[in-house]
Structure formats: C-alpha cells, structure tokens
Image (tube, rainbow, N blue to C red):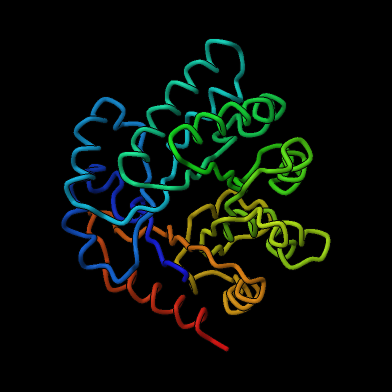
Length: 275
C-alpha cells in the first residue's frame, strides 16, 4: 500500500524561523499518510530537544531526509573533512532512528562543489551505508542536480561499484537534467526491475535544461511534467513504496497553505487509483 508523505521542509523554513515545533500545529491538518522529516543544519545544537519533541508528537515518519550540506565535506575531501561528514551523519542517523524512520534520503553530492570531485563521494558511500544500517536505516542516494556531469551517469557508476545500492528518484531533479524520460527507457529498466528505486520525490519543474534561474520546486501541475504518465508507469512497474511531496507550502510570511497541500495529496491518490 502506497503512502503519501509530506516533507517537513514543505512546512517549515526560513520565513517561519525553521521552528520544528510548528509541526504540532500543521501536521494534524494534513491529509497525508505520514512525513519525510528533513533536518536543517541550524538544528545541530538542539538535537536532544528535537528528538524529544518528535517522540512526543508521535508522527508517522518512515523516511528521513539527511541534512544536505554535510556531503559537501565529502566532496572537498581529506581526512578532517571526511571525519566531520561522518560525525554529522551519525547525528542524522540517531535522529532518524529516534523518529522511527526506516529509510534515509541522502544527497551524496551537494552545493556549489557538487559532483566536481565525485571520486570522493563514490569512495565514501560504503562507509555511509554501513553506518546507516547500524541504525536500522536503508540509505537512499538521490539523483541530485550536478554542476559537473549528471545524476544518471553517477547512478550508473555507483551501481557498477555497489550493485546493492538503493536510490530515491526525484522528478524535478531528473527533469532539470532532462533525464525524466530515462526512467521509461528499457536501458534503465534495471532501476525498477532490480528494485533499486525504493522511494520517489514528486515535484514539478517549470524550467529548461539545467536552467539555474528556475530551480524552485513546484507543486504538481504548476510545471510541465506529465504526472499522469509518471504515476501510470510507476504503478505498472509494480512499485509498492511511498511518495514524498516537497514543494514549498508556505509563503513569505511563513503561513502554510494547508488546502493546497491537501489538493496535491488528493490528486496523487487519483492518479495512483486509476486503472
């Protein structure tokens, strides 16, 4: 049974002070099945309070999104940077375990440095996976946008080195590189036939090929991605996992538009239930 998840990053951000306590106010009003909890770097000094809060509100959090910038330490390289990356990753894993998550979404490369030193990211993967597994987590590498090459090229290289690797496929990230269509191509059917994709991020995109001026994550239907085709294909592959919606749900004042988010969830269920 598919679960429709909402990213907590869609609910809390800079305009509302990244106040995770707002989840207690917003989440009960959302008609989703659970949440993908995203950790912000500004929370590292309050991890104990954060985990206590998450336990208290008892949300269904099957997936956690690792704090994004820690992978920049990996890309930079060197023993000191790598130690810092693993230290921060352990914190993320501890939060995920406390929240009851089973999967960890990870940006193996990130930021301006991106994939410019991909050999560093490639080498670090096995250690990251082992650490995640010790916390009962399945590590999922996301097809994050690249400054250098492209996400699918890196996925293939990772698969060649680590045949057991698992991924999360983001529709917006793929379309940014004009690689969404690759999901449907026989050349890449190993992604779903061998069950390497264990999660999907459902986000729209309105820009062109590597259009850095249009990076904004859009709600489904506000860009040009054909989601009816996407959901039909994913359904036909026999995928039984979950979907996370990440498009920003708050405005410049930090006010969350609950209705718009619920409409997204309803539309996704409509596509998933089509025969």
